[in-house]
Image (cartoon, rainbow, N blue to C red; front, side):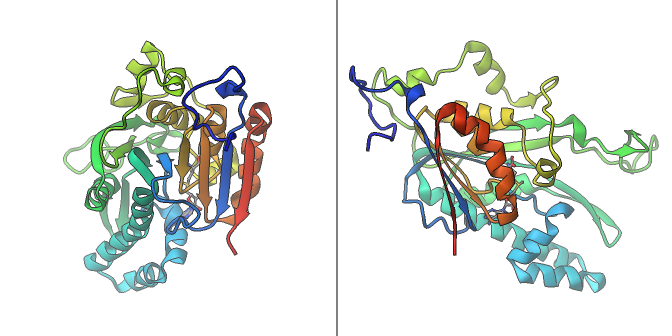
Length: 315
Ligand SMILES: C[S@@+](CC[C@H](N)C(=O)[O-])C[C@H]1O[C@@H](n2cnc3c(N)ncnc32)[C@H](O)[C@@H]1O
């Protein structure tokens, strides 16, 4: 199939990588089952799921698993065990997607998961829900190897009170103030062994990054000072990550012509960045109302790169 970037040798008649159209699938459906994808067919997964115990995602988790919605209702009279159960069920929900990701990733493929921990007061008790730790445990149980992760410093996470920066707890007096969560995690996992390439592999060499990019991208703390992009209302509602996050990860962990999966596509950032960086992509999004946002977000990249985009809705 000539449209796929599988050729390892360029003939005088072959197109350059940049001029060949890439393939993109947007599937409106639940990524807990990715029946459209074969085992080992994806080289990289880049995503940001709904964050357990962050209020904006409560309804989504409740709709996905009725037990979660029922437990929230019970919580008025509830106890610590109920809170734990809700947190466990939210992660059980996500873990089905991590297990499917493991199946569809090729040997040596990487999974990059952007996740934030959550702080929340429930029934008067303030506590941390360490989502990054739970996802790491789950992914190890599934079979992934945990790799060193990235801390993405997000200055905008600092809580505000009357327009000014505020700290949680009791101002300047010890000991009851809380540390502010101003970093999110980008967890990195590998399936199986390191990938192998033949010497002088053309697409791999065409995908190389600069020394500065390597030094910045592979350092543990990412701080996008001065590179903040405008975010639309709908992107805010889907908690979209900046293009820069997807771009770094795609260029760090895949080669031009390979396929990137985002099982929680949201506004379509991963698909757009995959198009612009000459990768193929597959994105799953459960909420059909987001489709117009996705299509408008990827439109310019699609035209500029002459990319092929197929949209399908599960019945
Ligand atoms: C945090 S947002 C992703 C934001 C995305 N990275 C972006 O830049 O726009 C998570 C998205 O996952 C979707 N979602 C949640 N559960 C899903 C599932 N099981 N299958 C597919 N999509 C799901 C939600 O509707 C939401 O749009």
